[in-house]
Length: 89
Image 1 (cartoon, rainbow, N blue to C red):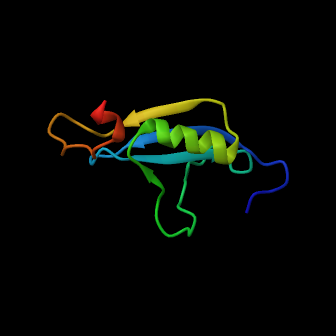
Image 2 (cartoon, rainbow, N blue to C red; image 1 turned 30 degrees about the vertical axis):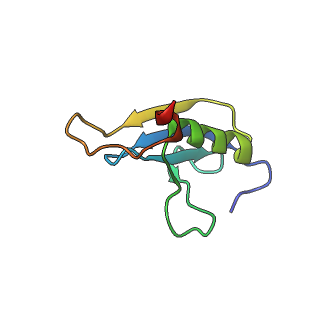
């Protein structure tokens, strides 16, 4: 539960082997502990096809404009990433 005045202090976007992005955050009321951002039902991690969609969500829904760490687990032998609308331009 978020306390009054609590806020996100840092965001980490992690690209998984399948090319989708998962969001982790640190918050002011927990000491440097990374928490995963879940979907609205709280049952599964919120995942994105592109890093820009993940950043847009963090900005729009959480009003966060601070530091964003971008990290990847993908390698040259990783499976193909999911198709994006921008691939058609």
